Each structure stands twice: as C-alpha cells, then as structure tokens.
Length: 146
Image 1 (tube, rainbow, N blue to C red):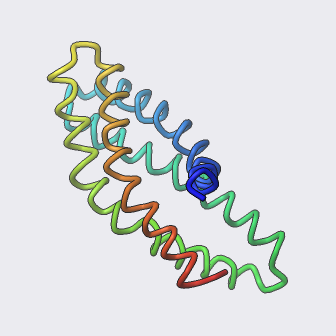
Image 2 (tube, rainbow, N blue to C red; image 1 turned 30 degrees about the vertical axis):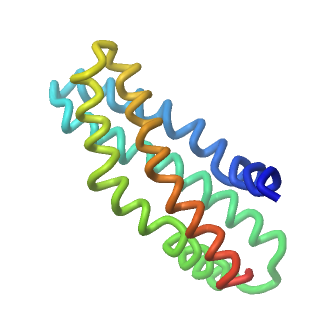
C-alpha cells in the first residue's frame, strides 16, 4: 500500500518539484545580483518556485480533467480551483510567507556557496511543505471523490 502511495505522490509532485527548485535557484541568483538583498532574493525565489510548481500541477490536472469529463470547461476549472485550494492552501500559507523565505534567507548565511545554500534551503522547505500537502491531498480524494 505505501509503495503505491509513494509512487502516486512522486507522479503528482515530482516533475513540478524537479523544475521548481532550479527556477528558485536561478531566480535567487539573478535577483540577488541585481538587488544585493538576500531577503528580496529569497522572496523572488519563493514566488518563482510557486509559479513553476503550481503551474505545472494545474496544467496536468486540467489536462486530465478535460480527458475524463464531458462537463463544461468552466465546471472543470471551478473544481480544479476548489481542489487546489483544499490540497495546497494550508501548507502554502506557511511555506510562502514564513518557512521558505526563512530558509532561503538563513541558509546563505550558513553556507558560503549561494547556489548550494538556496538549493538546500529549498529542499528543507519542501520537507516542511509536503507533509501537510500530502495529508490534504489524501483527504481531498476521500472528501470530493472526483
């Protein structure tokens, strides 16, 4: 059972995560080189990570929903929004406004290599993020069953 669940979670989140972390590192380096501020770079990296991560998940969910559903596109979009809010909002609130900016601001003080610091800070944030996200995803599947 756990093996199947882990496989499902990796299929759902893996590619998005694999693309979001490099987006965060690249954005952080660019913004830091322009602004000179670790905090501004951390916030920019957080938002780059979010755009890539959620954009890809939304795209995959819409594509899957469109293949399975005979209902209108608006109906599918509303269900997608409901599902994403239910699945991601508790963890995302903490991640975007507290946890990830904290890690991405602090790790560069602890690790001299900026790219490595952002990468490791992103990984630490992902661990904090995915525990409540996966719990909400499993609950969402049971509650909404669509």
